[in-house]
Length: 142
Image 1 (tube, rainbow, N blue to C red):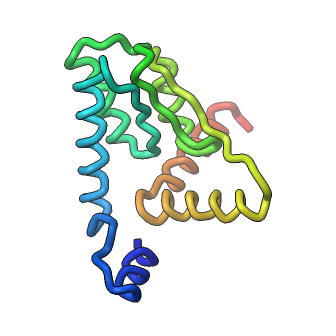
Image 2: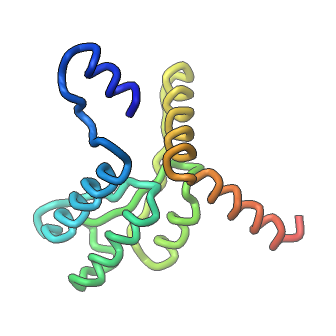
């Protein structure tokens, strides 16, 4: 967000992104709502590590009595991140996938680092992941 704002200021145009994370989340969730409400003509994927956004889609599907495995409504998270979200949605019967980043190392690693930084600095996701991993290690007696 900071880099986009700085670039926009440097080049003399308005920032193309939302002013803060809350506004970004609200816009994303509005998009999810629109897609679910029009699921018969739109296929969409809630590709988010945000627990609230995923819950929002699941609740909307229940509200509109849409089958959990409807082919037009999907969920997805980056492989190795938000496994608790992926597991619980899949376990409940929703269409869920993990996406795997591939390509030249010089292009993939910066992307993965950026995504990790975004999730940990903006949402606290990495601390949540660590908490769940630690809990599971203890549960298994490792």
